Image 1 (cartoon, rainbow, N blue to C red):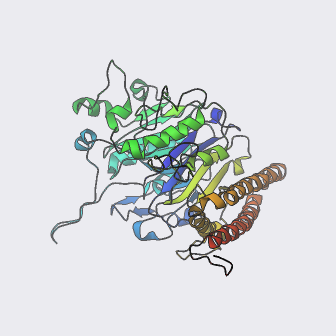
Image 2 (cartoon, rainbow, N blue to C red):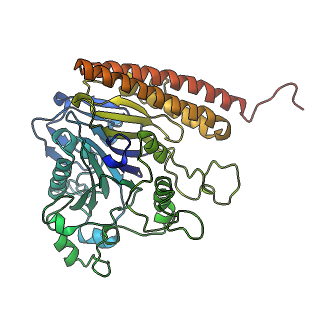
Image 3 (cartoon, one colour):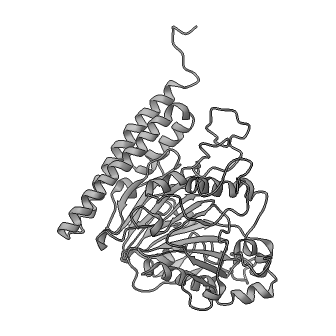
Length: 487
């Protein structure tokens, strides 16, 4: 999936929460947000793409997930938070290079060519990761360890980045070829930006094979690097991006510009991003994987980053000025996004409601991000009862309709969009603050379900109101408009 990821360490956030966020950019997949109870978790998992069967542990936890509504290609659960407040987002498709893929090929499904032969299952991938891991882990580190063991045993058919968070830590994991991987604990004061490339630009192998405080990797990674002559670094430095990643012409159109836009937002004073003396430009291969932001970030900042379309630059496809550069780089907020989530784990909230999942369906540029409590037995139908048919009765389809109408009439619709996004965020925060207090005072965590009903009712009201406005605006600007008074 061509996605974009943002990870915010606890000391980089406004409330000391950890946040992992990602746009899930598929093929305009219809998505929903659901709760998976332990009784509904499979005990034997079978991948649709890989045809691989895996026995699962017997005591799963409850967790949220954002699966595809159409199951023909598998679950694709995307993102969620489990009952002990561990979040996971899977996955960010990343790049590799021929040296790595030749040394450790991806594990792809091979259909039997004759009746006497048997199919050869593939490895695990984005379709599978969340279901295989999230219900069984109690910390972010455990997420890395469980998925790492699965990768070493079964392999993967694609190159991916995966994030885990709990109230203390965030871990970022990247796969290397078919069976290898590495993971880093995100520094608490930093923000990671990941745009479809192998991202890590530093890694302490001594720690990974020693104390394992902030670095983990597959057991034979050192030998794998040495035996296959993968290390391209000079002067004893070790940059995993140079070893395992890519620096292609396509990266400079599709990937690095997104990192540039996000870095420019995060550190406008600490680094120079524009002009002839810029440290980094949209096609730089050395944009840092993680940055200390010039100010602390809130969920709204993460939403802004993941809605990016190079606004404020010559590359903005919606610009009214003919800069000669409009639309030349791949935006972050695109039409193919199915769901965007922020898994936020808040250390100061009661345990029952530490996890808040911010959900945005459709194109982030035009749609609103709604917070809901994750540790509940079920979610309102406005989020969970999505079908393949267009409807104004769900957040998914309401969001898709708004985006499709507003995109064609950006200049006149954008004011409605900004008011809509601010209203949902403001009223959503008000309800979360209200119910945080009620739950803390009463000790009644069941109030979270009531809060989610109110949050969804509010979102529906705001979404229908905005849809009315952008529909009227689009109608007034139709090309076949005609009045008798026209000359």
